[in-house]
Length: 209
Image (cartoon, rainbow, N blue to C red; front, side, top):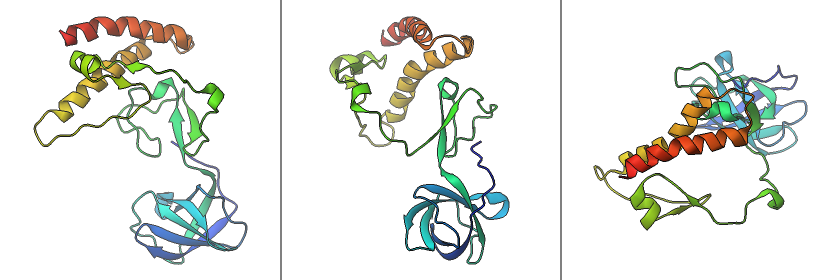
């Protein structure tokens, strides 16, 4: 779970309308994208989006604002919203705050990184065009998708869009997830990925047939 240290910069809610709230700080203003917490057990989470003046910030609630009222104390966590990153998060289900919601224990071999990180420099980005294999022959042959590109599905109810997405997720993520559970934590990433690819090929061919 993404927890921050106790704040030394308390604030007070002065305005609430829907999911938008204004908070007054008598000390220093929290930076943009800082996370504020309020309510019982600090369950109401607000992200700062604007500094209105020298004493007030405006934020948007990332959770339900039921119970949030004027005069309520607000806690500055002194940090942005973070998300878990790493091999331990593959095939897992988490909420927007990184908490596991798949009835499995929380992953320990992950890094918590800000969701507002700057993009990688151009020198680290790939400039070549690659095809993202889905393991479904009709898609890979007739309408191949580019790795890193965008695609969309159009269709009404009962035409198979959900089945198609489920099959694509199973073919691409399933083998990686199973191999990730079997491989030791200290195994190099390049060897593990090679093993995943070799294990995935028979299954992809079988489904294509």
